[in-house]
Length: 78
Image 1 (tube, rainbow, N blue to C red):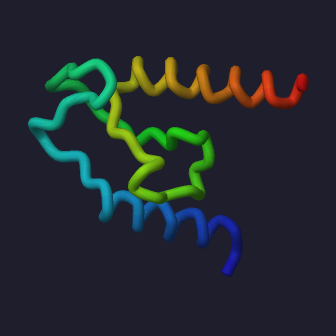
Image 2: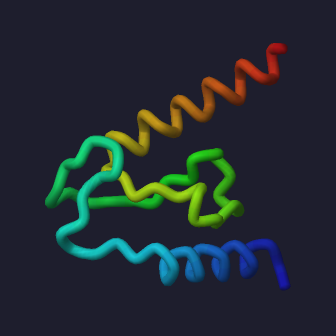
């Protein structure tokens, strides 16, 4: 199995375990009736643990991804 196939299987599994349905709200800002995406809290898309996933709006997703990148950069500088 190639990495691409493994990643697709992982994404499909994540979609089944964390479905995004109508009426859901962003878990960070609470906005409703917006497109929602799954965010990996630790920045690792291969970590599909329940404790690592949040459903957020695109604006919050960009903000959270920037925070993850900032923390990663800070760790590298230490």
